[in-house]
Length: 516
Image 1 (cartoon, rainbow, N blue to C red):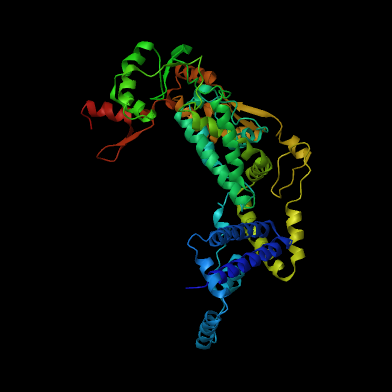
Image 2 (cartoon, one colour):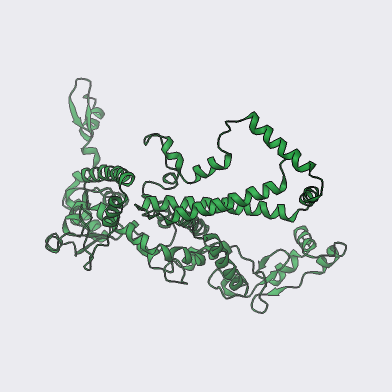
């Protein structure tokens, strides 16, 4: 068994070397944003290891089993036999293994600092930090909220379905100390679908913040925010979540503290007092187990909704209310990231498929060149990163071109990109510019809207954006005898045994007459 004092000394040394490693790691100027994020994750890992060793060291100093005290007494005695016995064991060990390799701590420290990358080829080495992000997040530069956007649009009774860019604008409009989604009605907030959506959004933003800011103690901030919200919730200062102490139509109800359930009428409350469920719940609530059954049959004191607020306010909407209110501390620091994500999406919308492939290939080549330059000369990589992340001056909010820069203003006016075109058939979709507006008539979204109205998406309905106008045109076409766009039977062809081709109507008439 190792000496307790030696273990303490070694632990102190490891903590000190970890502190030196983290100081040298953070003092290095990062050449790229990826390198900076790697260093922060390594520093976070080192801090976790320091915390674990400090906990171990504290337990050794507490010395609950008196092992350290016993060893101190044995070593502090006048007899040095114990000292020489241990010294002989150490000498025998190194005489037996003269070429002993580095200790486990040396390998651990090298792994934490990323020195194991030199042992692998560039193609074989897999960056552990890169595995934390999806391709859409681009190593933490953008957010990936497509799944949450779909969940939001699938909520019932929301004001309107929004595009992904509009969804990012909604999230970016949150204020410090505000509440997310103020545009959503209370009816939507009280649904189970909204609770699932807001929980999923909170979990993603918390995970994203931890991955992009590993040195920030997000969990403690969230614990403080949740504790503050729970305090306000119990005091009844958080309203608009179902009015848990009100009965149907806003009438006062009777609340049972044992069952934690609201009853609309006094008679219903009195009837449930004799149920087995209430008796068991009251028995669990009361401390004296012998008197619990008798007390519950007499009935728990009813607490009326408007007169007695509960210290632990029960509600099935507490989880949704909690996440809705504590999302602000997570979203406010991410507003620049949301804005960058929106700008990147607008820029990508203006690219063709070929240009996107070229951009992806160029990004990979640029990354390889930056890595090679960082190994030989760190200044080149820093200049490239600064140029890449340079803020673009765009006061007129012009769309971005294929090169990531705003398009010329004359081109913006030429294509009429400042003019909005709305299409009621596409669920009030907005299209900027005449070209995009005309193109959308052949897209799947407009075709789906026409199918939902029971109309074909033909050239007759081109430039028709209102549902009322489309239905009126369809009726007019029927009256004018333009039946060919509605009667599929005239478009379907049939073939007889001799190979003669007829339309469906003619074929059925001839078959009924027995001619074919």
